[in-house]
Amino acid sequence: MIASASAQVSLAYAFVEREIALSKRYWAWELVWLVYGVVTSLSVAYIGLAAPAITGGESDPAAVSRFVLYLLVGTITWRFLGLIFEQMGETIAWERWEGTIESTFMAPVPRLTHLMGMCAATLVRALGFSVAILAAVALFVPVDLSHANVASALVLLATGAVAFIGLAIGSSVFPLLWTEKGLQMAYIVQAVVLLVSGVYYPTTVLPGWMQALSVISPATYVIRGMRDALLDGADFARIWPNLWPALLVGAVSIPIGLRLFLWAERYAKRTGRLKRSG
Amino acid sequence: MAVQLREGVRTEKKTAALAASRVCKTFRPARVVPGGGTTVRAVDDVSLSVWRGEIYGLLGANGSGKSTLIRLFSTLLTPDAGDVRVFGLDIDRDELAVKRLINRVSVEASFFKKLSAMENLVYAGRLYGVSPDESRPKIVSILRRLGIEDARMTEPLEKLSRGMQQKVAIARAFLSTPMLLLLDEPTTGLDIRSKREVQTFVRDLRDEHDATILLTTHDLDEAARLADRIGILHQGRLVAEGTPEELAARHGGGTLEDVFMTLTGRRLDDADATDAGRST
Image (cartoon, rainbow over all chains, first blue to last red; front, side, top):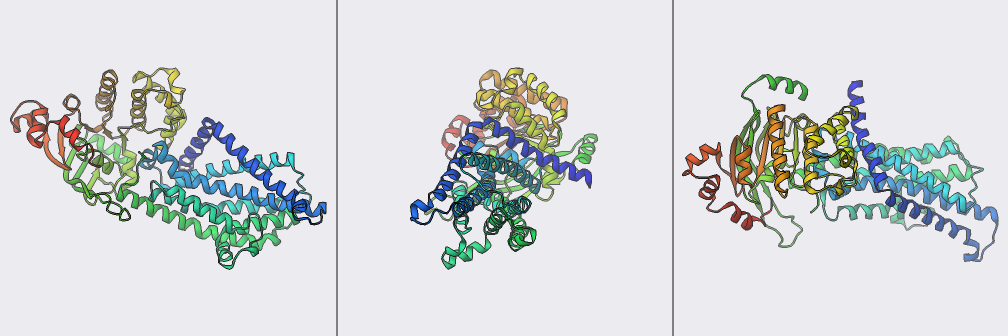
């Protein structure tokens, strides 16, 4: 049993090692995404700093600082969750583009191990990017974390990652089913999640039907909880109302995502879609 | 299970490495495409057996169903009907065990192009349970034997020629020591020298490592040079099977080209040109 688990970990690590090697070879693109992440986060932070000038309201430094942190928590947490979503969504599309999809799916690796390996690689990359973006933004914009409860924030981030993995695995099914337009479909799902999850605003400002969607998005709870933890120092008991729904979404979405993926793989094999592009 | 099977089958003699029975595969157009596409019966009631240690050549024009058949045997496609077994294991029910026994080289070398041959092969080795400590020396040895210099092994694969990439693809398949190797037109597009090197390696692979090889080709010389037995596929059907001598004797003597023409009504080159558009 232990030997078997160890063998599966070793197989899963193959995907982590591969992704690290690919990141090194595509370093220029990684730099582009990093700069893009820093610039978009900084832009959002400057909107916060400029809020009094834009609205003509009072320029209470404490309120502005809180508003900036409110926006930054949203944008950087979304960057972290979004990267998980994007990279998992591209699991199939990327291999199809490289032409390696057939050799990967022919390999004697259980699909669960394959996907867990990809998830691990994705988490490493998303965490690295998010920390680097936060550090870079802090160089330009004063970030007041004096009230932050870092432990609560880390628990929420870890929970959010798990919750998003199920959603991301589910969305990676699109490129498996639709060889040409599947990735675009996955991006649309990601965009809708961004809209309804309160990344830059409280979900209460949304129309009723969008608020209904926000209830099933794990990002809603993770971002709300992250704000409680980093702006108001919420402890574990206070973040629990946001933690348990995220855990519940993860517990439900991961098995559903895996089931969907396995079904889509069988369908792709039946219809001849498990092949490289071109 | 696959390991036990490896030990078991090596002690037996006449074992079917691959047994396909009445296999059919049809591709239908997507329903959402208005008036687009036609139904293609790519593989039509094909039955064949490849014996352990044998090199079996599947000969056919473009679009005859060769690649579809290989993809069915590779677990990348599921048949609509029929039964496929690899060393007695059902490719559907025992998929993971079958995957441990087989490997495939396709007409296009499929790699992460920015990664080097070494990085690609170490990754491939890991997927087949071969640790980097074990795989690295083995990779160097195989690639050297295939005529790839040490310095080229760490260059991104996109910088290697098509012939070299195809050799790396063969090395990748060899690395997992497959009991059944599926070669889908491995020498198509290669220059004469690379073609000969690959053919020699394929023969050595069978002779030295007890591998069974199913080779698809539309190169008559290659089929005659490598294959112990040849099957001729025409429009998805296996229309003849036997050693080159048996085929010649059964179908009016002459060369393999003559046999092909007798069975299909066309020369292989003409058939390639005519059937190039047929989807498989």
